[in-house]
Length: 495
Image 1 (cartoon, rainbow, N blue to C red):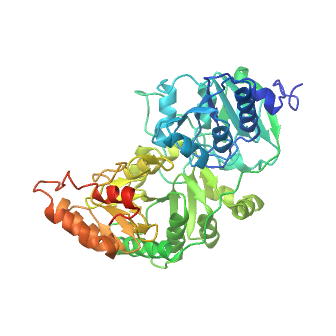
Image 2 (cartoon, rainbow, N blue to C red; image 1 turned 60 degrees about the vertical axis):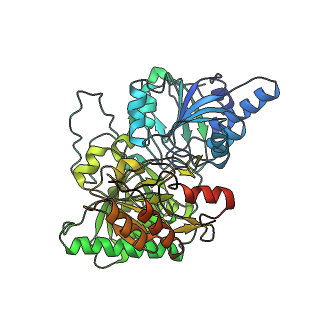
Image 3 (spheres, one colour; image 1 turned 120 degrees about the horizontal axis):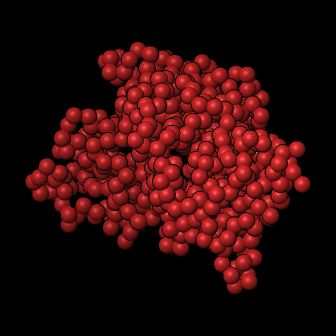
């Protein structure tokens, strides 16, 4: 049986899952839950569970664009079907297995994944399963709510299964701008000269001979749930807005403003909402990874003029609003492959202002986005490093404390380094903001402690710096992780 007169077999999900063998490398479309395949990974999890019951093993190497729908990471982790994972995840069951060393996790800059795949650094790709609104007999694949790394998966997979989702909005490809970069040394400059510039096609391409089947689905993306904005997030948003308005007034940001990038989450949503409501900030564009809830409202008000991203990370309500008014949103939203949405050259050319959340930062400006006490993975680096390293202004935000003020986000030395002091320019908590541009380590420490640390921890942090040996970077190797050691032993960084 073929699919809608196309020369591709129609498969049930379990038939598609049967194509996977133990040890295979499998890629699924997903960038957050947006555009995640759904039926095939669930069927693969069922196969893995059945194999375990028979005393056999079915474990795969898994890659996606970023985090996923629960049907992928949660279901496969709980079935013990993942042996290796890259480049990012946000699944509790998977995180637990990674931290128990039951799953090998390769944390990676999201912009690097397509090139790693291109040159075989992560091995061969045996199967790609990609969600689409439509596929044509000549290999045009019209993607759904995200682009992510799907164009690269289609290009490099030995075999391809398409999940055709009946709930896909068939106008979504009008937002897509899909181009695959040629390998070096023949890469011309990417001709994106503004946030909304398009350089590609509305579809991804695949050799049609690689398509081994089509699975029909009828299921929406799992909506993203955001908690209500709290007072801490609002105070962080106030500090960021005051800083950017002062930079604008001083002429360090042009009058038309610069494109913004913001990570996923409640703090980023609060910052974007605050920027969009402040009369001192002119209407602006975004050049980012995700298009999330606060941006829908800003776009309606005319504050956000346009947004470039790679996925729609929206609540059910906001996704419905977008789907119901495509005439309004199509000209204002561009979705690109992640190697372009996160491309260092484009980020630097456009002068993007990046705003990303971190777990902790130290008194000298090093930051940790990924690990608790240096060992326990949370989610992964994601795209934050792509932007922090290359932004015109890199702003890192975090609540100053956690766990009832027992954990400080400001520490003597971070327990894991994701962003170095060479890239970090501005750090912000609800306590205040520290501008670290153009100053040396000791002055950095004073500003970070006085402006950003919670009052409960300031004396201890100042004492650490004062007692450190003399040197360019005054660290005491005997006590630099005392905060983390006390937390592990007592549950409180001050003991």
